[in-house]
Image (tube, rainbow, N blue to C red; front, side, top):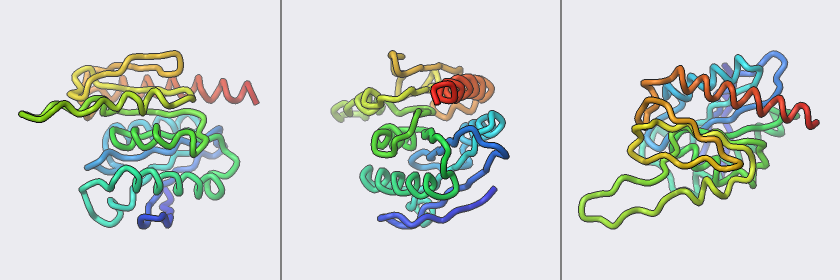
Length: 210
């Protein structure tokens, strides 16, 4: 595992990079709002992707590197993420087809920046579709537009008991439900199976088209 520090407009980000011997592509993953890159589902997915012949980068946003738990504003997250992907694409992951994703907040960032970063696919773990209602407060808006705006193949792995709800599949979006809540930790085997199948099919399709 190699650690790469990357300067962004909002502080230093850190990429934990595990390179494949003969990489077929690269998967870059971001963490949730209050968590880090050691979340069980991120670790499991990184392992599956590496076993499938992909180089994998787990990215810590600058606020986490600085020791803060409260997440930065969305535009800070997006700008830092875009900078990190640009750095990796011209550096450690040069020449590789890129896929992006993350869990919860990290999945939202990957969706919002998919066009800007030019990735070939997006992987969402526990996408926070609809914030649970708070007592006495008006309902928060759905984040479905962020998913719908993605124009490349996408996999959403969602717990069937996720308090944020479950999005529907579309032509570009495959949704797989597993027996878990928002953490996904109670059915990591199903998460690994879904991600492994999707990655293999996507990488094979891209290889065949090139």
